[in-house]
Amino acid sequence: EAQVTQNPRYLITVTGKKLTVTCSQNMNHEYMSWYRQDPGLGLRQIYYSMNVEVTDKGDVPEGYKVSRKEKRNFPLILESPSPNQTSLYFCASRDVPGSGYEQYFGPGTRLTVT
Amino acid sequence: GDSVTQMEGPVTLSEEAFLTINCTYTATGYPSLFWYVQYPGEGLQLLLKATKADDKGSNKGFEATYRKETTSFHLEKGSVQVSDSAVYFCALILYNDMRFGAGTRLTVKP
Image 1: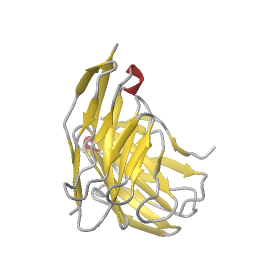
Image 2 (image 1 turned 90 degrees about the vertical axis):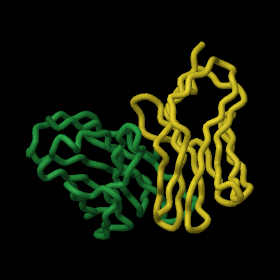
Image 3 (image 1 turned 180 degrees about the vertical axis):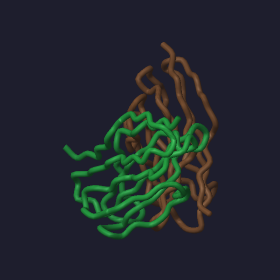
C-alpha cells in the first residue's frame, strides 16, 4: 500500500530536549516536505527536499533541521524545542516537483512542548 | 507571493443540505488547484483537482471548477452527509511551490 508514515504520532516533551520525528514513504517519490498546521493558519511549509542530499527552507524553517540521506526518509529534527513549536506536523511526498501532481500526506504528529 | 483564501468556518449544515465553500487564489502564473480533506485524527487526502482553466474536478459528489477569470475554485456538493464532516483545504501548486488555505471545518448534523 502506498503510504507516508510518521513516528511518533504523539509526543510531549520539555523545552530544550532534542527530538526527531521520522518520516518515510514507499512510493519512490523524489519530493518530500514538512508542514506544520496551526489553527487559522492552514499548513505552512517548514522544509522541503527535491532529492537525496538536496534540501531547502520553506516558509517557517526557524528552529528546525532536516536531512535527506536516503530517498525514502526525511526526518525532522528539533534541536532545542520551544513552546511555540507546539503544533501538528505533517510529512508529505509527491512524484516530481511541479504542478498537477498529487501530494500524499502522513497521518500527522501532534507535538506538545512544555 | 502566491496565496489561497478560503471562507472561514466553521460551517454547520443539516444532512442533505447544499454545500459551498469558497476559495480564491492569487498567483503569478497558472497554477494547478486542489481540494484536500482532513478527517478527524488523519492526514490530508486529495479530494479533487483541476490543472487548467475551465477544468472541473469531481469526486464523491463534490465538484469544483477552475475559474481563471474570477481566480476561484469553489467547492460544492448537492447533498451533504454526516460522513462529510471534516476540514477542507483549498490549495494551489505553481512551479515547485504548494500553498494552502487556512481550512474550513464542516460539521453535518443528522
